[in-house]
Every structure is written in structure tokens, then in C-alpha cells.
Length: 409
Image 1 (cartoon, one colour):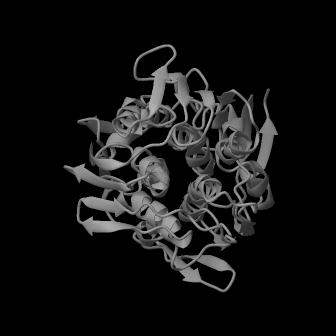
Image 2 (image 1 turned 30 degrees about the vertical axis):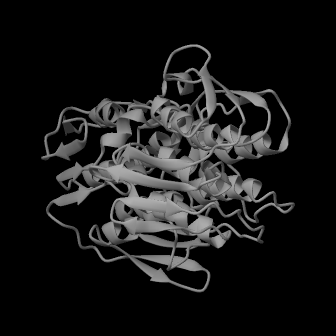
């Protein structure tokens, strides 16, 4: 399947953004550990959250989380403390994504986990047991989802957890998001120093909980505002004092000429027309916004140097390679450095006449490149259905905003 898009000359839209996947999936795990009879309100209607709900509500021996990396990490920890024996598996790509760091940490706490095929990778066979808790050390530059998975089960452990993070700590906002949600549900969990977290062995409390809209999804509308000559966009359900680290995207976009006005309903985006000659940014705490800003800056002809991207190679795809490959089709030669830096000094090549953007089973590739149609009207998007992973209504919302979408398949 391929989508051919065309953009309107001016965009005026009010968009009800999807609920936050990051908050939804954490709230579901914590809610399940609280043994609550009520489900959080306004859960994300995306693949990752749907497979999480299915795994937590259906009593099946084999759990297939498909391409949901968050679900794989969080459920691996959750199943380790939940009675019963389960197999957890996923897509071919998911079975190539490493999980050994999390499994080793859980085993150190007493978990019974075995690899079914390849050492260090899913699928896993997990037998739930009582974990005693312990002091444990992880490198701070591992995926924050490993850290969050361990933290969320900690209140259920006999002795809780004292978690030490060594070296550089990446994605700290996601760790803080997890701690904030744990505290909302009654856990005693907090940083005790700049690199240590303590979680007491105190069970969660069941509470009513409503999920806020997704700042990651909002980034694509900021991108549209930045690339469009005329825009009037309102995004509903965003909070000024958000738990989500990706809310920092609004501040970065302000440097690209898009300001944020908070209202009682959400935010309104305003275009100032100002833009920097060059943008340098550390994405260590907002890696999921990297694709949005790489594409936006290239299309705005703004040279950039983005650091802190080391987690991109183990996402749904190798996002560093994917960005370089697909932007080259549009005529932009992006360079990389040390598997953690992407930069562009304005170097161009001849673009393809009808570029078809590959999405690599990665929802963020589709959503970050779709707004490029504003600048590259012959472009097409391959396998557009991948957006269901986090933003199922993305294409519908684009149509509402005046974009035309034709299925070429």
C-alpha cells in the first residue's frame, strides 16, 4: 500500500489528539499491579496499548505483542511477578530487538525467565514468582523502558528496589514520568541522588485515572505548522504542566518559529516567521522527536547537529539509517557520527522524481515524513498503516486539515 498526498495552500484545523501511549501503557501496568477493578479513562487507541490491554485481561499461555516494544519490556517485568507461566513473543523485528539487559536484571532479583530461541532476544518463557528485591545497578544509557519496567514492579517486591544508574543517564524524563505515575498510585518511589532511585515495598492503591493527550503526536502538527505558509492549528487535550518529556518539543519548535498558546482546551500554534540559521540540540531526553526535527530542519533548509541519538538504532528500526536513506530520496545528504549524532550542513543531491518513502514498520517514519508533501508534492508514503502503532487516526486527521490522500495500491 502507498499513499499519494497533496497539501492545502492554507491549513485551519482543530485536532483531538490521541491519548498518550507512554502514559497509557504505564498506567495499565501499575493499575494491574494495584489489582484494580476499574480501567484508566481515555486510554490510547493504538496497537501498543491494545496488545497491552489484551495481555492483561485475557488468560492465554502465549502472549503475542506484535511490534510493541514498550509492551515487550513492561510485560516481561510484570509477568515475572505474576502467578503463572507464560510465553511472550512478537514480530520478526521484535525477535531481533535485544532484551538481555532487562532479563539479566530481573534474574538478579530472582526471576525465572528463559530464552526460547536466541540468547538475549524474545521470545521468552516466564514463570511468575515472588521476587525479593535488591540493590541493582544498570548503565544509565540503556533504554529507559528497561528502567521503567523494573521500577513499576518494585512496590510488589518483598524488599522493594534501590536502583543505581551508572554513567550518562539518557531519557531521564521518561524515568520521571514513570516515577510520577507510580506516586499517583500510592507508591513511595523517588530519586535519592542524581543517579539512584529508591522504591519502597508498599503496594499500589487503586485510583481513578485519566490519560492526557500525546505530546509526541502533537509534534507532527507543529511540524506541519512550521512547513506550511499559512496555518491555524488548535490541538486539544494537552496540559501546560505535562508529565510527558516530549512536551519539550514545543520549546524546540519555538526556535523554528512556532509558538504555543495554552488554552483551557489545549494549545493553539502561532507562526512567527522567525527561524535560526542553524539548530543544535541534544535529544538525549526526547529521542522520539528526533525524526520530526531532522525532517523539519532539512525541509526548512536549516543546517543542524543533533546529539544524544544513541537509542535510535534499537527502536522499531535503525532510525539513523532510515532517516539518511529516505531524506536522500528527497535530495538531502544527512551525515551521522558515532551512532549517536545526525547532522546536515546543507549538502544536497538530486531528488528522485517520484520518491516513495519507506517506513520500515516504524510509525514515526510515516508521520515525520508525511508533512514533507508540503515541500515535495510528488512524494508518496509506503505502508502508511504503520501509524496504528501510536496514532491510528493520523491520516483521518490530515484529511480533516485539508490534505488529500489517495491510496495508490
